[in-house]
Length: 433
Image (cartoon, rainbow, N blue to C red; front, side, top):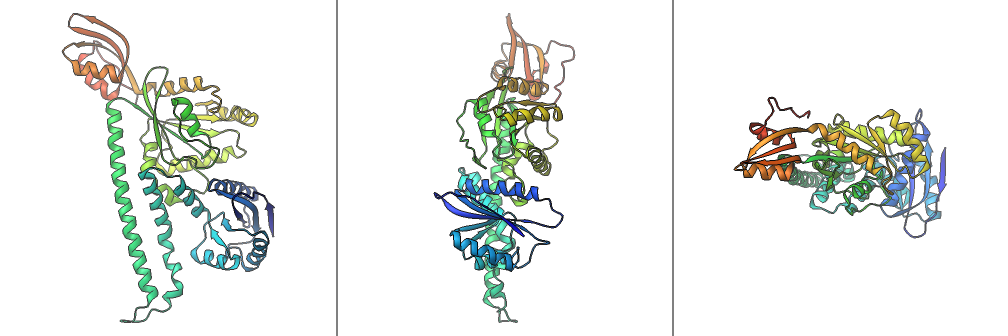
């Protein structure tokens, strides 16, 4: 059995989406991921003209959905002049090739579509490297099936066939490319590590904005920092991480990074390829988890983000939940329920600025434990330390007495160690972090 949903849009490349509901699988979950697949296709610039949801006992090895169902869909494709078919799950190269022959049009799977969007959106050298690595890692294990039509020609010693030769040549070429890309990305990771060390030496708080794609992360960073990062109502609107300075009410210097959005069925090798970017999450002092409270499957999206965070080792980081889009009635109602479930949270509208002042206060409260107040008496001859304090500490009080500067400051753990010899307190407090 199958269901067909037809849609119309005459201005873009026409795409048919296909999903499969297996025995004992909940159909609403498949329909939900199909809705997301439609958004992915539209983000790639295509127009979804229809969807088939196929119900079957198990995946068919040859054509994924079986020859009979493939032939039925092929007739619909010809009648509606569809230029591309996208499956909601990964296909083997053999399945893709067989379906392409039956449909007589291009066939992609979910991972290929995501990779295409990533390739469109990557702007920086780092982003392009990460996308290229993900593409090659996707292709590498599929080489053998791509050359099965030539492998039959191989013989014994001295009679190696062209299929085996071509397969080995392609594998070596891809292996070399993957090694080169990994080496280049290792240099990117080293550079990012040095940048983070420099920020920590100067006492900057590092905050990473995480969340499901299209939850409003870039819009929120624009609202908090006054930046003009590209933000559109589409999946993976921004791919490259963006860092901006944000001033909190306590004047603590803070750097906020907008990271790549997460998604259901995010392929594992994509997470692996984007480790250079996702390290910003692992190294952050605080995670701001932005959630689209108006989404019908908001709980599933929260779970999907938690799953990826757990995979990269970031789930145990201090986290502030931000329930976005309360300018919509559905979002406001859902936020009330979710804030009872996640006490360390705030409900906002990044679009119109509602409750952004409350968010600023919550951010300051979350980060206050990483700094400590100290009373200091610093000789004016310690010009370097005084300059460092002026630049990187919150100076609450200052008074000059003779050759000394008497200060009340809030400093990071690193700076507190430098200031300890000039403390006027018997036992200066230790930072909580």
